[in-house]
Length: 107
Image 1 (cartoon, rainbow, N blue to C red):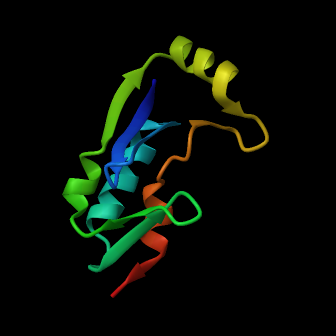
Image 2: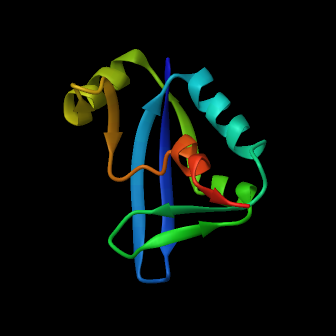
């Protein structure tokens, strides 16, 4: 079983940002735990030439994600449609990865 993690948020009331990525369940739980327990400070996630989110409240940011368990058969279907073979993962859109967000922050 895998976890389909969907992201949905509105940016500056101008447009909606949608993405998803498939994780192993423990990988997703670890990512969330590390994000919640990381050093305090502002986080940023940029997704365009001058568009981005400022992340102050981690719990508020995490409310933009929804993790859904999927079967192996469902995973295979997603992998056929959205798989990134040379990286060996399944992703659609510009997914805001919590580990990447944690790498850059202001104290």
